[in-house]
Image (cartoon, one colour):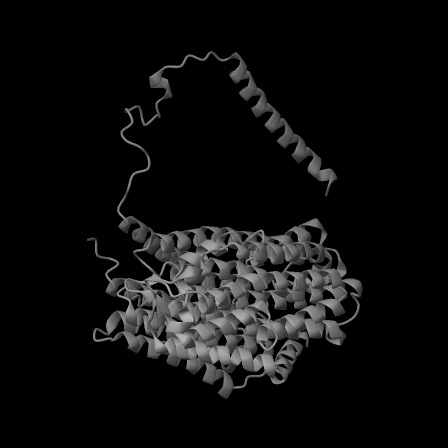
Length: 123
Length: 499
């Protein structure tokens, strides 16, 4: 294991040395002429307006959370669909369906709770 | 290919009751418009009682469940009852606070239920994945509980700190589990034990175990993973702090003891040295920092760190004999038995005395949800509220380990086991530390009984809380005088895990 890792380590070493070499070279050889425009933050070529620490609507946070819930649901459903056919053959279909049903029921309970509590109202 | 694992419904019934109950409480809260505040309390209490009755009435065959993912045995049932009890007490404390304050948070009730579910799963886990699942279910609920005072900046800050640091700790645990999976070819504790026993794990196995230790260390607040504890305990509402100091710690230790005992052969070599250092640091730092706290919640936070140190001493005593004699089965070792039953007894006593203390703290306050969180707020409490002062005094005596209380006996069993495991210097250091701790616990008693009343006293807000805390304090004394029955029970419970 140790011997076979040597080429990989060599490649890593060369990569690090190359990167370091060019950083040092450009720092050493490159001309430095400062002016205010150059030191201002780059924002698509438009002059920057305000700072980055702006306040934004807290609802975005909730929307992100809801997205996460349903995104995970989809991620979990997809592989389940793929293996469901094999469970039909092995006679575990009822079990697989029941498991997914329980999972979805819990998720829907959370969704209903959010809905009733007014989490989806944009005001 | 899906294979159906055999499902033993009676064994899983308590988990289903708590989980389903949590969902029902959520829906009732969302849909029933004519709900009074105490309806949800009653419903949550019923769910807890239902789960307890399910455990008493239905006696499943002990053993692994769901293809070896969970193990239900007397050891896990011991913790289940403890956690259900803490959940119930917390529910009563919380509803007492809400009945007085304007800031009513109905989501408190399902969150406590889900947290207890996560803890029960955590203790019963026999697989790293289920361990992770339990930790996350518990933690996510507790993160939300911590920010229970919406308007207050300290509460939100505490929740955010806990969430960020807790996520880091979970990531460490998961990384460790991945490495262990790579070494052992499986995530079950049994697979880890098999690899650890042969000593073929190699460096990756050691790193994996180290990362898993970090995950545990964060949850039980070992130094140097304790930084979050004082801020979070201080920022959370007092009834939630009590829940965290007792239930979270008990569940994490329950899982840690199981993990240590079952995956032992590999652990002893990798963990013993590391844990010795962490134990000494945890005891010492916790006690030294508690000495200088002006806030009673911060003082109890550091005290909970110190108590984690004493408990770690017991964990070390379990690890010690196996390190010397790996061939011998654990159940034949009297030292392991003594250490294990001592640990369970200590955890039980620790939960009782902390819950009693936090009950008194949570019911004392001013209008607008201001808590009496400074030690100075308790000046002259004995004159105004003799019962509350007595309960808090008993809790403090017990935390300090004064004879006649459960705290003394717990320490006695633990230190005795440590001495039998030939950890004499560590045991002496533990005794020195508990002497040190007497100062800051008794300071509270002195302030309550021997100083003048303050000009603007805090009101006691609720007699139910005081009654419950009083019962817990009575248990603290009762177990401190007649420990035999309960100690026999903990001994039996620990014995079932050894097989």
